Image (tube, rainbow, N blue to C red; front, side, top):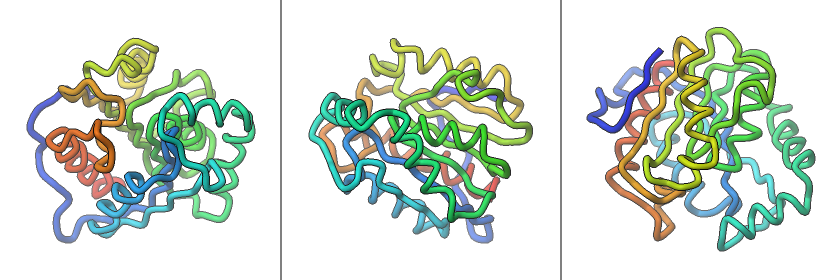
Length: 209
């Protein structure tokens, strides 16, 4: 198991690296241009990326508004939408999510057979929430080390427990104080942190694909 913090990445997915199929769930702002832009970065490296819309076309200007909509729809329905998004896709997926989207991604990674890996951005749930972590499924968790949501609301604690319990698990902390630091379309965007995050993600996908 590996527990790493901010530092130089060891390289990027290069020519001839394996390709992965990723199911990527959006954050509380909805399926925004920022989510599409991140997915395109992965596609440019040769990976297949699916970006289902959990909000039925709705987007929001604040985390509070998006979470409020999810509560109105019901968390069970949001989770069911995530599961339906996976139904027509092969078993061998990498499940990824940003913040709110980590919840369906983590549930699928833990409960749908055949997962190749998991990528959690800005959030992490306690493993016990969905049973146990499946053997042989690698995972990365990425968060900002001064983000009050990630650091103070239990996410980093859940991530550290996951890293301690899983052989192939990594927690990466970045020197930033914004929750959505890797969304290139938002004022919270941190270009340096995102460049490093993308490099690590592409290395991961090249390894597990």
